[in-house]
Image 1 (spheres, rainbow, N blue to C red):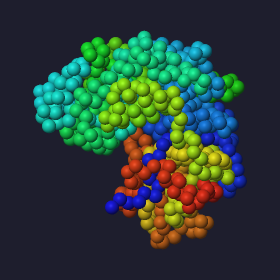
Image 2 (spheres, rainbow, N blue to C red):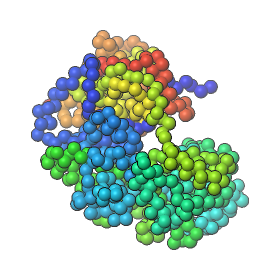
Image 3 (cartoon, rainbow, N blue to C red):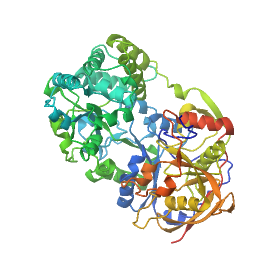
Image 4 (cartoon, rainbow, N blue to C red):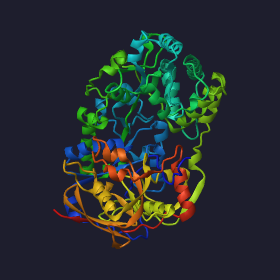
Length: 633
């Protein structure tokens, strides 16, 4: 029997904002004003917590005279559009991975023009032009490129003496040869929108990169509300014809469309699948321990028609408000220069091989890429088209084609109809109305929004104590109507929830794990605003050195924590963030971890977890004063 997941939180990524006030019980007094007054304060929103691996610590070390506020944000332009709709301030520097000019058009008037900056001049013009708006301005710059491709088990190819393909017909021949051996030639995680989008585009990159394809893309990216741009009649019919043929050639079977990463990846590792769709970073992680995994391009009819599909690990923009402060503007431009340097892009990639869109940055490729080197040398790097509607419609239409419900012609017509009349269903229906607003600004007494959220989860879950860690809160809580989309933005992406019965002494050990610097120097708190957020429990810490904390007092609802008393505890956070050596390198003590009960159930969404909580609480609850930071240096 499946366990009931009260709050699983494989939740979509979001952000912390520095505004919004309301009635609350948390003091906004910050004792670090003296320390900060001689520094330039810069807020920077990160599209995902992966940027906390090496990138944010590198920036802090690179610019010690800047007071950074790093926030895990939500990976969509809609999130930032929502900030503007509430007349709130954008962060100084924005990063976002899912990007298109089409999605970003509402933000454009509020962003700096970077077209004449020194940083912009370092890019290859072909990639920079994809971000140029109709009036000639460039508001977004692409970070180094993640490579999406076909991964192949070369060890398996060698075992069965099957040649590595160099074009599409050889790719199909290799699939047929593996199928004859009882091995799936190609299988992938079709459940996701990005898989449908990338393979659909990957099957026809030469057509999409033609003059007709380039012109259509420019028209689409510059469409307006008054003039919606549909699919053209030259390039896009070929896209669907190629995708239809691809589905047949890979020996697609009914039910494959439901497969997710966890359903495909183990089979690939076990040698039951010869090829899958994924990224270079995954290929490198496999080759280091399992077998020789190599990268193959998306194949064209000839070797010269092969392409690698790429997308920036994020796009970067700067708020136009920065221009009002000469010192801040100068600092931000220096930061951008550092970000797009070779050193900066390596820090952002955190050890993974990426390709650069910058002329001045050299990239040393790994052996996994040797079969795609021709594409790199000839600059056959296709930048995916990735608007919100293209993602959504690619999944919808792609799934219909996989299931045999639409042929190429019908899919073309369906896709065209959907992108010219697209409405995000999660952005329309109002689910509840919040009466009080709570800021997510972090102070020496914590964050109001974080406290409100954890109080809501604890009360709805009927636990005595709740502890959130690793940036569980992504946005402030505003007063007003909430749609499903806005509810999802309350919490950060990819958190899990656990429940356990712990004694008071064990709860102290949990807090020590989350707060104290370890003997080897590992620090569980990368940035100050990532302190644990507690409900039903209050704690005091001493900051004895900048960025280093020591746990002091703990109380439970103002009363002494009793060592031998048992308490029900809800834990919400991301173990990977705390345990991975590239993050905090602070694994939870094993005996404490064994006492947790994993609340995860497949396909349980953040929409369900929060709405179920609200069914009981009716509102996101009032915050409480859960934290006190004492400066000890």
